[in-house]
Image 1 (spheres, protein in one colour):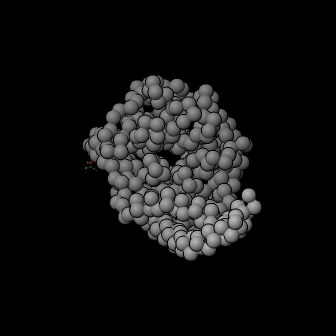
Image 2 (spheres, helix red, strand yellow):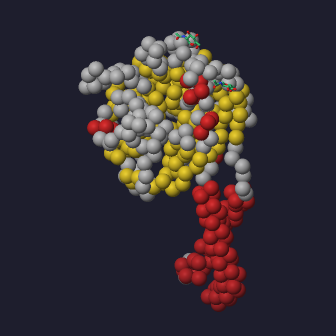
Image 3 (cartoon, helix red, strand yellow):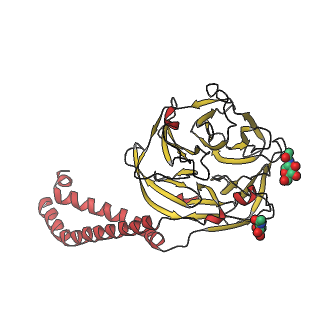
Amino acid sequence: MTLLRTPPVFSFSFAVVTLLVLSILLGQAPTRIQARKPHAINFRYPNLYPEGITWDSSAQHFIVGSLRARTLVSVSDAGVAETLIFDPDLPENVTVGGLTIDTVNNRVLAAVHAFSPLPKFDALVAYDLRTRRRVFLSLLPSSSTGGGEARPIANDVAVDFKGNAYVTNSIGNYIWKVNDRGEASIFSESPTFTAHPVDGSLPNSFCGLNGIVYVSKGYLLVVQSNTGKMFKVREEDGAARLVLLNEDMPLADGIVVRGDGVVLVNSVKKVWVLKSQDSWGEGVVYDKIDLEEERYATTLTVGNGDRVYVVYGHVLEGFKGNSSREIFGIEEVRSEKENREEGVWIFVLVGLGLAYFLFWRFQMPRLITNVDKKTS
Ligand SMILES: *[C@@H]1O[C@H](CO)[C@@H](O)[C@H](O)[C@H]1NC(C)=O
Ligand SMILES: *[C@@H]1O[C@H](CO)[C@@H](O)[C@H](O)[C@H]1NC(C)=O
């Protein structure tokens, strides 16, 4: 018993454990280090013009929406596209915007908006993923404090672990909440959302709050297109704070959080990769990835293996009245900087492993001698 507590033996078992852990890590190393091309999916679905995207991990496929088709389409890793839901009860030509999966209730949630000149319509709709039946269609109320408020735009949606959904209004700069029974209310109308100057010369300066994501520790992150700002919003009461960043993200659209806590935000031009050490009191833009602007990426999602994908939906072209496009894309975005540092991280571990191995190799005979001496 006492033997086990003497320092050399302790170091020895520690080294063995480290070597074990290391061999597991090294087993994965080749696939991590390998320079892999980003995963690109092209799928055929005439006139779809998808704006929203989400990943259904239980069915192992993406789900995308449509600019006008009132349709949700599943897209496999291999690019097989199938109609998942067509809902003729939605008004004709409405846009299915943000999408998310409520894993607790096994539903897909979609923010729906009718662009002018269609009659005003903003809703959150929920479909059961197993039966593919609609669970609710909830109209989103206008703010009572907003007075003669301009027509809202229900844009993106996030969901917490209780099935509550949060929907951004890009015009009114507030957030709705819709619980799992479909009851809608206004959740956050923080003055912080309108405290920053808007550059009216930007092409989409009308568009305020946009992408939204739920972070597991009881708060949401939301980005604002016309200021390039990001806000942290408390789930409990909707209180909001500006997230301090080293740069703005002009025309930010979608936002996701990866399993490792890294946040990615996109515009049509690029993806910003962000990290934070303090649960998003402040954060840094750590890397930027260029996108193919003419393919008009609107948002992103986290797919298999924590990989992040943008949807290339050509929405602007569709918006201008074109209906003849048949092929759309879903493409992985990868931070080269992150990958390089991941490689370095592996080599540091290898070096560490070697040091432990040498220690073990040369200490071992002495240890055994020591142990022999003590036991005899
Ligand atoms: C929906 O769009 C189609 C094709 O652009 C058009 O023919 C139709 O009139 C539109 N319906 C409504 C209600 O605007
Ligand atoms: C409409 O889409 C088709 C197919 O993608 C493309 O070839 C054509 O140039 C587009 N037309 C306009 C006016 O954008």
